Image 1 (cartoon, rainbow, N blue to C red):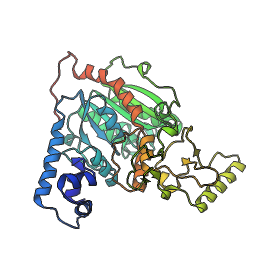
Image 2: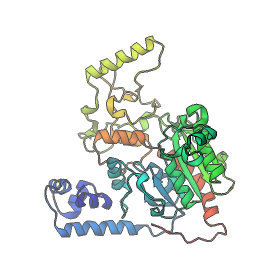
Image 3: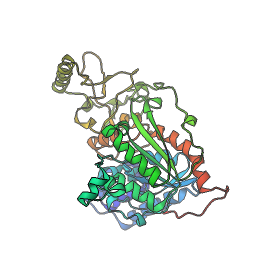
Image 4: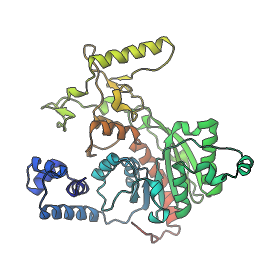
Length: 410
């Protein structure tokens, strides 16, 4: 990534906005981004000033500070910021996810890469640790057997080598007031419940946090069946209760709420939609060959009594779970275009809407990368509601006497 490209993202400019602000054609901007032409130092300085101005825009003291681990494209960050939180550290290893993150959160600080390479002392103090950690299998064996073999057991043996270990070591080092962790629903039943038992014991018995877990379906907020386990913990008892969670009626939103209207009521966007009516680009329609294959595949498995196959949606539908593999064939969510046409994939903008991202969320990467990123993301409104529920309990610990405490903000 060129310095110009990085500054452009941090400044929050689209290519057309940058062309207007800097007085160049869009073609020049693209050449600057690719490093084919070198912009003048005055151009770079203008961008640096814009970045600095954006960083100074928010002068309101944060309700709390948080770190964003395994950040992806920032879904959990959006949720925490919606209730007054300020992010002081970000870690994300994927360079394409970093690109999308920087385009939407133009922080005046770098994104840390692989969290395993980051020392706990290099992470700023914070009030809340936020992480959608990948869960790898835990190997659990009897302590006596481990002792006999001269191997580590307990804290190190059961979690070392997994990314959950990094969550634990940062919690141990910083002792934040609270944490918010997210994972797939099956985490609770993995390995007959043994994996979750280890997680629960580490967080509670060994680290002393209270733990509150709940499985929430995103279909309460967006037209997508997407169940995730939410784990909320506090350093001390605070009276937190899931009874206070406000869930809209499941299914009150349907696919028609997120699909492109294709009637000219929205402006065309990039290559997603084209023409005066902003019709979905034909590139998203399945080929006859792929559609025939998917129908045949589904029929074969149906004959065997299996439920495998494609998911066809219309305006009144609720979609299946959007996955990171959506870029391959889009089979889990195909939009019907009528009996005489092959269905189409969602556009990346529709995927963003399906995950609860606002219309101004920038998508600076290829369709393939965008599909992966949204499939790996959290449904933002779900966690915005969880953050709203957490916020007064975090403040109860951060400001126990009602007075703001001094915290180190990175």
